[in-house]
Image 1 (cartoon, rainbow, N blue to C red):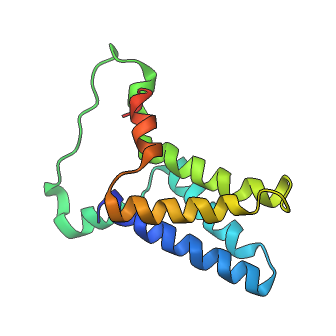
Image 2: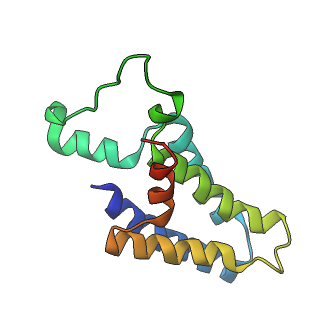
Length: 133
């Protein structure tokens, strides 16, 4: 599973979470979704890495960490930061002005689906441009 497929699945799952939380009038599905993304971001146990390790075994290519000459920003992965940003932008409207910025999680879900289909994610492109790995 590539990050592209995961973005598509993550966007579709967010749509389902938002629909179910609106239908049942509860915030628990949104908290569970954001908690899953925060767990992946904090521990770096990403579902895509685990599935690739199961599928291909230890023959997968690991990127070597370079020496201490590099900046600390180059050691942080953009996909990891994307998980923090998505969870923050999903949780933010539920606490800060939910009547005004209710559309932000729906927009994020739509953009994740489009990023999964086209493999063009503006947020990841910006994060890589800013110096993340």
